[in-house]
Length: 244
Image 1: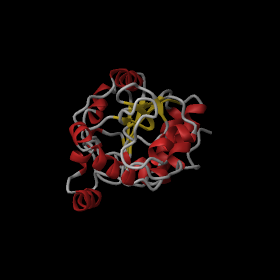
Image 2: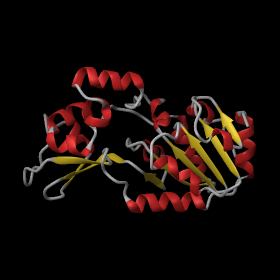
Image 3: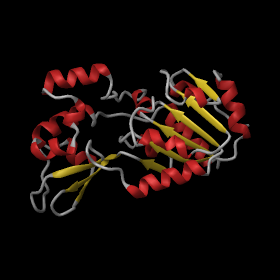
Image 4: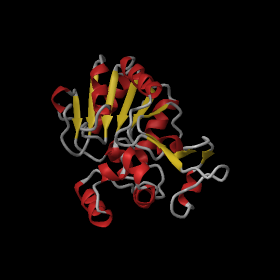
């Protein structure tokens, strides 16, 4: 059913446990481009000679870490701040209404906005580890490095704690996300077209009453959704969302 922000407010007031499953559209409103979009993919292929799916693959990282990091730093390490959607979700959690944020994004903006329970399906750019000795490095170390980041202890290549193509999701993170969805009576899907698996498959674990989709483009869940809102998620999940 096509609905309004007012409909969402009423639904949230009636809900006991809400889970949020979000994608790239949540972060694009903070100025982080969707590297999977047609324009971004074409730009990557023109500049680097490969599509994003190759540039951000496990094998490519091993074989061409210099090109990998050139692309990674130019696309995934852009400075950004939380937007109204991030803050609204943090408020819902603080009010005891939201049990978890499940995100496909790797920018850490949900935590920056104050969210506590965040399942990062694809990891985070904020965490980086030496592939040889395991020493931890923060995002500033990567951003300020020249060329391929090397461990200051052993000289090994430092790898972002993100799930690259050809890599599997963290089982503990995935289990936590599934558990959150199973316990929710309302699932909000926002900023994702549900085309990236296995994240898109999480919806099958939802057995609650209310399925909400907030996305500018149609998704595979629209037909079964109780409420569909085709507006920017930052506009929908804004300061106007209230539990009063």
